[in-house]
Image (cartoon, helix red, strand yellow):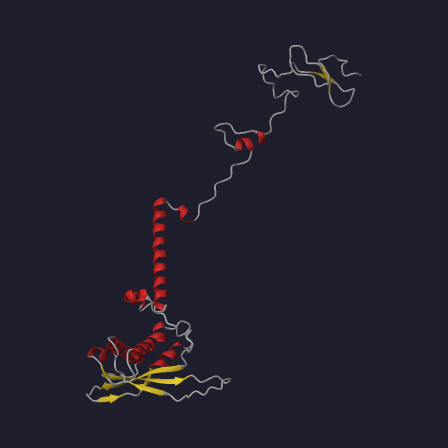
Length: 303
């Protein structure tokens, strides 16, 4: 059967030569090759004609939602069918209000400035003498001492190879007015026994007596004569430390007694050389004995 058997206004549905034929809609051009356009049409779509009904199966297929564009004021989710992504949560100081953000930024700036100043002071303190340290040495020392003092003893080419024990004895006024002299008390050994086996040892027990002796030895010559203005200061500091050590151990006093004078000495012993070394090191102790120091009344009673 020919495609033109039912006239120009008819077309055959897919499905075979014997399938039903449906009429063409009014104004539509024929899809048969060589079929001239119907009367009243020129092949150009008629824009004045009403839009075809979406329910008409012969009308154009609806535009997929993914291909549509959002109209003005229409949310994008109504076009794509997917929910809009939530904005990323704010973190850090961004969650604060503007006023607190400014305060936090100022605090961070102050911390950064102080850290830079501290690092610069420590560098100038441990660096070799230069123009800056010569001109501003006092300001650097005021910043560093005593909390941030640095030294190179740990990394020195010849580290300390001696054990130094600080010992003290006292001249005591008894209750009946007589005097007696105590034996030598090894305060370094007492501090060491308190530190040994202690998981949280006292910082004072570890460093107070040692630093007091180092301070004295650095400000006095071999004849115990002070050098510079720090000599008298180091004497008073060492005296108070050893008196506190006697009082802490309750070693020198009995009931009704008071300390009149104290005498300090150091016992220096070389660290023995290791067994694999051929170096011969003398192990005989060397003593350095200081003169007697009289105690003020307040210090003697406190001991």
